[in-house]
Image (cartoon, rainbow, N blue to C red):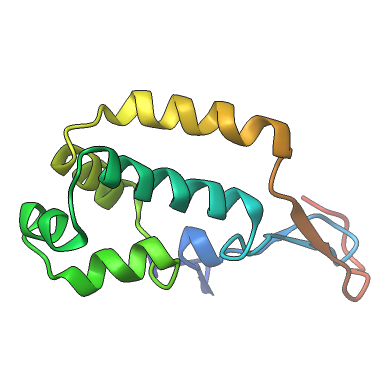
Amino acid sequence: MGESIAGEKMRLPNTARHELGSGAEITMAKTLHTRHNEIFLEKLQLARLGKRLRQADLADRLGRDQALVSKVESGERRLDVIELRDWLLALEIDFIKFLSELHAELGPHGMSQLRVLRGKTSDSPPS
């Protein structure tokens, strides 16, 4: 991932900005403080509580400390997809079922928006 192609340094996928022509760039909107993320975090916490586990109990199952569980549930720290899978396995919850339910719950709230940033007009046509 941080390799270069034709002398141009590539960014990691979660930080990439892609040219749209005419100097416009598109980036993913930050989702940390969105209703979508609130729903996700609530679903994670309810999953733990539904198994009648304390944060410390889940942390033990994950081989991590309770502070991590607290930070994730409060939105201070995010989980990547592999960590989410491990989290759900520790709770004995089917990963695909959880994602399907989350998808259905997020549906009425629309889609997280992409931001288009307008910059200087490029003299060269988009490739």
